[in-house]
Length: 601
Image 1 (tube, rainbow, N blue to C red):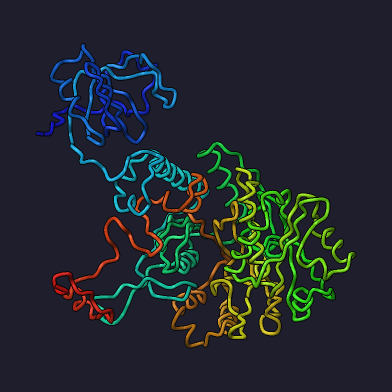
Image 2 (image 1 turned 90 degrees about the vertical axis):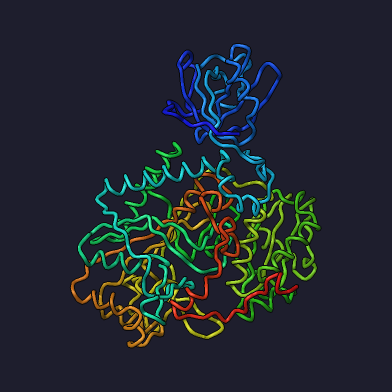
């Protein structure tokens, strides 16, 4: 087939934007063939572009050459059609254009298509690996196009809001010096400075602080960030961050500007009102009540401490745990007894063991009398106290973990989410939450030292500074996270600007003066030239899009995402480079190259 040329014919309208008020109008539309139905003397073609679908009609009134060309159309052919909008004889209520069609007078086939490896429909049953290999086809699906278009709108509202509030968009470098920031760096060898490497930024943290020292006062950027870490559904090795920093502010100022942004964004993009101020929760309360520093507060199911009830009971699993410094915690699933049979509880126990628990005790209140494996070891008043503390009633199931505090809480936090999803009790709404008063240090049981929970420029709360050396557990950070529906959207803090306090902090984190100078000297040196008080945060644009689109994975809101192994299946990245490139960069690989099939033969 020789393809047609456009020859000056121009699109006048998008397929999905036409309506009954356009009846009688001559239009030109372009797009891909969703499907063609040849009924003999009548042909219908569904033409698709990014806005939707319009039906093209060819019948006995159609010029013969145009009709014959319509018989050639197949799925995913690219074509252009001119014609007049008319009312459809059979209405399709499934699409917005379902009561109109185009009576085609001119048809141009601009591109042929092979049969695609999967059907281009929203609910295609193709495996994700296949769809990602042919991502350019996958992106034709209307649900993914809707996500990408919504992401564009989110980015536009973001820029508009921060511009209106005095923020300056400034790009920071993507080839930087490697500095410790919590995850592995992606590194780039330098051809000119042989043996030296750039790093891709995990965040623009130091540069945005330097911009505050430079006097720009309010900075924002849709910043590309890179972290070489294990992936999951809400994590990608390269991601976009709505990055912001403000001078001459305190935490409340940052909260106010962020809440204004969230309120504006959700109203303009989704038509959803987000009440402000957003609720707040201390880190310690989040961990103790929900077993997570990013709790999903759309449902209750708080964790209860029953250690004091069972510390002297006859069940040694409980009593010995408490006596050895551990804890016994419980969470109650209301009206779960019919769903969580013994078989289901056994499966949940295996899940608990898989994430660190030694086991999962339970009380199942399926009849008038609750049953459990450890009841015979407890006095009646002890058992009754557990039921009262946990609020357990007929029809409920109580899940209990006895272990070190960190393990018990994290396991029950995960169990809480698993059970809520199975019971289908999580409402479809947006619950925002600020988490505040994070511990500054975290005890490392393997090394016996206290490690920093944040980057080294995070300021401690003023009242905690006296405890930096004497009692690390009493030191809390002037840091904050914004959580939405159990997913961390952002992290931020007020920064250290006092050079003496910064040096003190480096020493508290185990960095010598020399190490601190080598890693961060260009920033700490800048503090000596007049540093304004400042703070900021970074909101994950990809995660925000995922939640606003109600998508299951970040891969559904990123045009060309990576998979679990950090590979990009469509292009085949990462890939080997030539020996010449390696030589130019003065690097060599220690990985033994695989033999080709020909060499094996």
